[in-house]
Structure formats: C-alpha cells, structure tokens
Image (tube, rainbow, N blue to C red; front, side, top):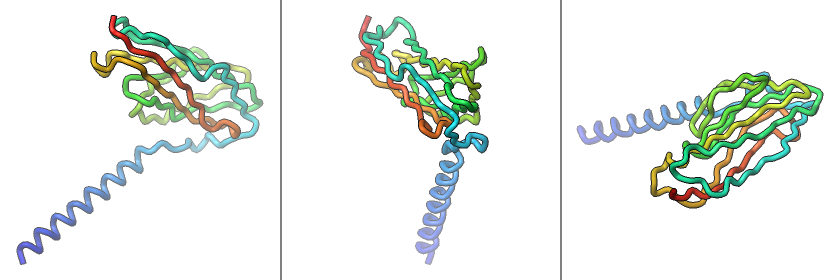
Length: 167
C-alpha cells in the first residue's frame, strides 16, 4: 500500500513539473505585438544581408558589422523579436539616433522599433570571438533574425561568417 502511494506521489510531482515547464515555455515564446499587423503598404529594402569577416583574430577584440534597413513603403515599418543564433553574438538597432536594447540568443523583449517612411535603421552586430574559449577556433556562422510588419517580408535574416584564428 505504501509503495502505491510513493509511486502515485512521484507521478503527480512529475506531471506538475512537466506542466509547469510547458507553462513557462509558452510564456517566453515570442509573439507578434498587437500593433504589428502585417501590411502591404510597408516595404523593406535591405542592400546587404550577408557578410564575411574573413579571419577574426581571437584576442583582438570583438568583430562588429552594421547593416542598413530602409523603409521604402508608404506605412510605418515595425521591427521586433530580434534574436541571434548564439550567445556569443549580440545585436541592436538604431532608429533616429535612439539605440534599442541589446538582443541576444536568449533575450526576450517587448521592444518594437518603429521606422518612419523614407528612414533607415542601422542593425549593429557584435561577435565576441573569446566567448567560447581558446579551443573554439575555426569557421563560424551566425544568424540574426527579426520579425517585421512587411507582408512580403515578415522575417528578416542576416548571415555573418568568419574564421576565428589564433593571434
């Protein structure tokens, strides 16, 4: 009889842990902001979406790259849910000289950047070659993604590559 109570207790605790984990995951999943309805009047122009740093010296500091995002449509462009593919890489957006929070792989933010018609945003990407330690040398590829309210481009993705080398 006691064995059945123990087994039942373990099963109940397991169900509570799994249920709590699923609840927490559902709370941290990125969702579209209520005011970011997709629009056919928003049009994004991104002259460059890929970049190769070539050789990145391990102890020479962070590697940085900027990308331009233009709003060439007739409605306000909204940029949100900015993510990086690795914790060694961070990104931020600058719109009208205002810098967003820094975004990373695990960042959850309600931040929404609003880019007026005819204006440009600057996406700044920072890669830390020392983040994974001295054994993490060699080729690397990192992605930065964000969502938009542009009906024809609801997701933007930027790809950066390089080769981390010893000094």
